[in-house]
Length: 204
Image (cartoon, rainbow, N blue to C red; front, side, top):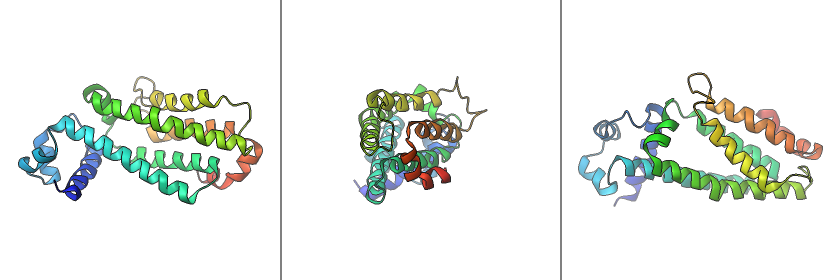
């Protein structure tokens, strides 16, 4: 298998799904848009469901690499949290198809479950560690229940993606994401924490 070609296809497929949706795109149209033959496609993916699953994993791996790079340049835990928020807003703004998330939830449960596992097994411990470090540095309030707050932050994301609460025809999910998390994180900070990360808060 040509790994470079596979990664290119995954990146392009992910962008295609985000802009045009998933369910309404027949496999033939996907192959045509990606300029890949059915034979080459079958060498890399079992079917469309497998493509969606692998694009989800590919994007998760991309996020982890980006976070690792971020941690090398940003050391303050509150600034790291806000930088992760910025990345999340940027990524959500790439989603132009209003049915992208509902497609994953309703029609591609394996991919959706993979994303949920990422949030609970990676994002939640990541948040727990950052909040704990911020408390130690007195950048966040000392009375925070770290485990509970970390879970609340993750669960808020599921709430934001609930179309019954925030229908995409009425709400910009990236702005909802920003509004929920920016002010929530601000409320967790001490005055010292707000000052230390003031430049990050200002540009949000």
